[in-house]
Length: 242
Image 1 (spheres, rainbow, N blue to C red):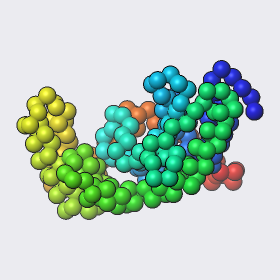
Image 2 (cartoon, rainbow, N blue to C red):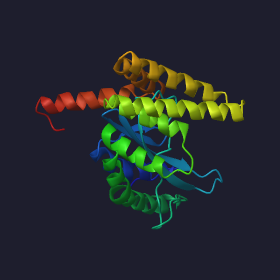
Image 3 (cartoon, rainbow, N blue to C red):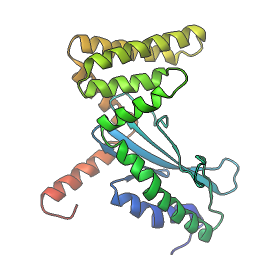
């Protein structure tokens, strides 16, 4: 296996990326990978330790693109575990040998831990089920989670449930802002809730969700990923290897 000054980059390209590619994950650059299906973005990235000790972790997440995104969110997901029962795994890449060994372990965890989890959140319907399950376990209702749930429900045509989730999310955003006015981002949350509530009332929720989807694609810079997916689909239809 080739070596370079960036042992982690070589190990990622040579060991992890080929396995991710088999499962339709694309390289977004800067040690980030993703795939999109049914409006759900499934994402993982390699996070370098801030201590400069050549250690790294791997974060993973699934989230709907029908909620307008300006950045990746890791609310539903977490970090690859290294030891069973521990959710905060860190590996070393101090040299090429250690980086290769670490990445082989990461690849194994991807296939046996992360990939089954990604399968459970591969569609909007399945993502909604997982969001609802996790949200129900929170000690206090979370406006962000409820809004994601609202968008999934609206996309699936569960408008009565979506309306309830949107109104509940709006109430929480307003309460957060009243308790701490410095959280001006809560006002944007209130605005989005009002938009989806109005859209459902006017039966224009599909148009709004498609607008929000395009917003997410643009701001997360996913156009190339979608084009690549479309090209592979066309190639497959034409009789070429998928």
